[in-house]
Length: 333
Ligand code: SF4
Image: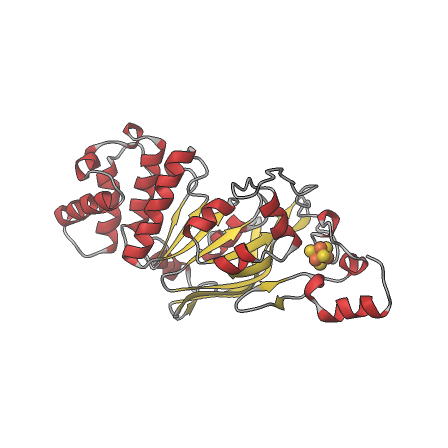
């Protein structure tokens, strides 16, 4: 499959009250054409910062992209001029936000707002742009006539559909959706997810879906990256992650969601909290919360270990040298 975007060794830091906060630390991943990557983790894991860094929308200061590259369309987006970036944003890469009101202007009709995006990005007349806006509304399941209404006349779920329509209006190659269903109730969530899956198939758009919800991931994603404290701790295809979650943090995420198939439906939440970003623990940053932590985990940072296929994990339990060392010295856990 053809690679659409490749993020390499991306690090983002913030400065707050003189302290340096590593929000994203050396992460790498790629998204192929037509595929959806789910970036999963708790609040504060660095998911949104990753998305903003890709679009180079990190506010500087207090934020700063420290290193890395984002290869897209033959360019490194982190090295390009702002004028080039402006053309990429909303043209080749667009974003859907958690709160659809962020992308909607209350004083214009929904149809006009979509038409405006089309008119700005394509060389078409205003009448043609309006006509096209109608068909995009239909595509997201809203009758074209409703284009003459204002955002406040739509329900939450409908507004999010409009948000998706605006994001799609310029035929982007990549759609970044940041918790697009979190603010919606469960039934509407399912409808919006179904819509996104259908659109992905119909339009072959690639997507990065940011979420804390593994249920959402299972509906939409092809690949999954699990983030913890600014790092990707596990990566794989949907099947690899769901069949064989390997990192203790990923296992913890699975144990803390209700599973209809399990007879015992007792939930085991992960103990403790995500570390304060100004005080990321030494060694493996998950060690204070990890039920399988070993002595080495406090002092040694785990490398990225390749399991089968595309599956990778950052955990000493899968590092042969660490495991062999423990057996030879008969080290207790
Ligand atoms: Fe747990 Fe150690 Fe693996 Fe980190 S490296 S996840 S602390 S076992």
